[in-house]
Amino acid sequence: MYRTHNCGELRRENVGDRVTLAGWVSKRRNLGSICFMDLRDRYGITQITFNEEMAQSIKDVRNEYVIQVEGVVALKEVANPKLETGEIEVIVDKFRLFSSAKTTPMIIADETDALEEVRLKYRYLDIRRNPIKEKLLVRDKICTIFRKHLHDLDFVEVETPILSKSTPEGARDYLVPSRLYHGKFYALPQSPQIYKQLLMIGGMDRYFQIARCFRDEDLRADRQPEFTQIDIEMSFADEEDIFKVVEGCMQDVFKEIKGVELPLSFERIKYVDAMEYYGSDKPDLRFDMRLNNITEIFKNTEFTIFKNVLSNNGIIKCIKINKAEELSRKDIDKLTEFVKVYQAKALAYLKYRDGSLSGSIFKAMSEEEKRDIIDYLALEDNDIIFIVADEKKIVDQALGALRVKLARDFNMIDENVFKFAWIVDFPMYEYSSEENRYVACHHPFTAPKDEDIDKMLNDKANCYSRAYDLVLNGYELLSGSVRIHDQAMQAKVFEALGLSQKEAHDKFGFFLEAFEYGVPPHLGVGIGLERLTMILCSTDNIKDVVAFPKTASAMCLMSEAPNTVDEAQLKDLGIQIASED
Image 1 (cartoon, one colour):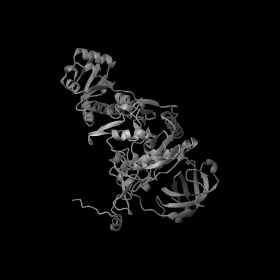
Image 2: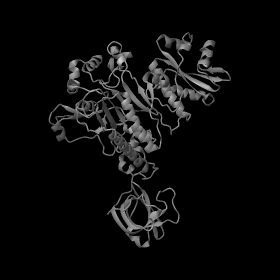
Image 3: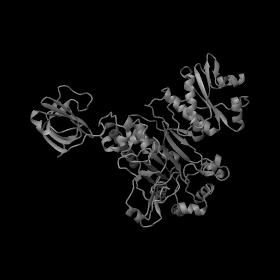
Image 4: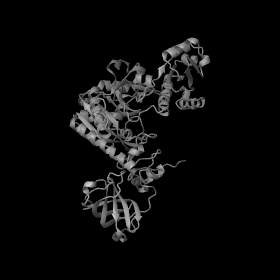
């Protein structure tokens, strides 16, 4: 027997018991003839004590050696309140060394001074630290809760292929060359989208999967090239059915992990309203500070900049915050540079003090405009408003980002609050300037809203879909939609996207063929496991919740992947590496 107890288990009531423990040496302290060690495993730390008779057998033992000890549990003279096992120690009379260890390149402790590059290169050491270990345990717990909840609702867990056909889904595919079919490639799935719809056609009715997904795209703090989504699909159901399923899962997760009782149903916000009031389709609702459309106030303006914007069908919006006295001109200049990142050309401002306005555009405003803006915004003493005038997309984007920045800068966000909302009625299409055409906003299998079917071909800018996202505290947690189940409707969507019948067949042939054999109404979601874990673990870095993450340049520092392969392997695959010239 390697151990009778783990290193986080023993308590005062175990005093007098004979036990066997095993783990890593976390710390060693010599006090004359007595040696104390902290023994660590996944579960915690227990102090073990060696008397003078044991000194010779442990003289070479250092940090991170893996050992086994036997002994009797004793009560400490002075308890350590920082440890759950802090009242006891184990007086060791038998010792066994399993393996020795070199001096580690990083401190194995809750606080470490190691750079991220070092932590990623030696990730197996980083995982020994509580901050990483605990996040991986939370991730496991989330999966367990979801599995139980979904199984209780009669969902069936089904695995879908990793090696599949390349289909256009918005990002670049990771391709896998075929050894047997030179010049042909598998693709790693960006999501199980087509397969989960095929499972509905196959009559599985309620499916879920904790699925690995792969996208070859530029990375950021909340994105990795390979990620996991909790994938759910239902037949003979509508939006309210799947909303209820997801809300139930989230209620269980947040109650068990955070002790937080979520509302029985989450707020619903139309996409157009989210953009209008928050400048984002993933609004952080933990604070208010809405965007205000003040275009009408300036409809007769003589201010040249605003006048030019309005003549080009632009808009004028603002946000207000009661912090005028805390923002200097230098602070405002920094905020101006901030909004320029989001393509805004300028940031105007007005301060309201003692019943009057001042600020960068004060002199360019008419008396009527001044009165109207005070009344419309119900300005109070010490309010400051920030104004952006430009095309709608830029205004919403810039002010939406500024809204969040100001809330963070002025500590307006309660980190213990969790505000969910369903964003519904997304546009069916979005215009791609790169491709010079409309493309699917979600994916080409998303159903349009019934009342917008007639707009699919001739009014794409105003055609909305039955797509929905779940957002939480400024993050998009999931994306989903009602799927098309009618052949004629699917053909119409492909036509709207500029795909000929041949192109559609080449890209989705096996899927479209399935439509000829009876398709039930169905819908689904894909929940980002890493993002959900990040929020529950109070981190904004996705690498913290992934066991073996990649860097921002998609490298694995530990395994040195990607890397070169043997020429013989390339020959088997019919691949020749082109020179960089």
